[in-house]
Length: 313
Figure 1 (cartoon, rainbow, N blue to C red):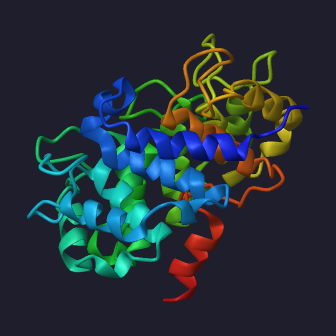
Figure 2 (cartoon, one colour; figure 1 turned 135 degrees about the horizontal axis):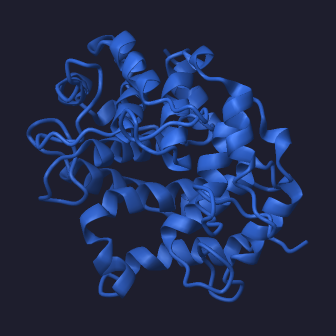
């Protein structure tokens, strides 16, 4: 079995931020806050977060905050729930959540809940179970779940459950591994996993493993490293991870590394990016790969960071 090249991956992540004019940097301009979360969490899992200037990062994150309390993907960009969670997670990595005006941020998130319990992503009103997970995760990390109707939020998520045991982005929408993670994660955070048929969903999820060992997001699709997170974390939360071949999945992720320059791609020999580097390393962490910090499958943050937040309360 190959080996995870931690030094090269850390160097790659740090280089992406420095190359402001690179193609990768330009196309990520509008979601730089997400990119910061992927890169910094990867560094933390690998024990390399000290390589980053903490004060510089925290200062930049706070400049992405809008007057509404929400965060945009970069300085001057419109706020969205997607970037608001990334901001909270990045601050959590550095133990700096206290720099937030918790009331202001939690009011912004609570204002996105709709009457049926669902959440919009921003003021324009798009509804998706991703936003339900993100809102619940954000408020839980801020200790402010009391700001919303949790019961209605859970009821809406359950209404998105399908006959195959999976979940879609809205009621009646196709089951997809990414949406399944969001719904299972949201139900885990709210203590509502009893709404899931764990055997039925576990069967659907374990069938996502293809012959190469990788996982796909839907039937008949190619495997992709990012599903090493979406599928694997869901299987762990419903206690069915023993239904897949973990050794083959580890090998698939390692085969997607750029061994010379660092970074991980979606599939072997494709171009690397920060997104797949994070999900590859996070997947290996869930698989208990040696030398990596454990990551929490529901909060998508290192376990020690999550414990720090909840044990301090």
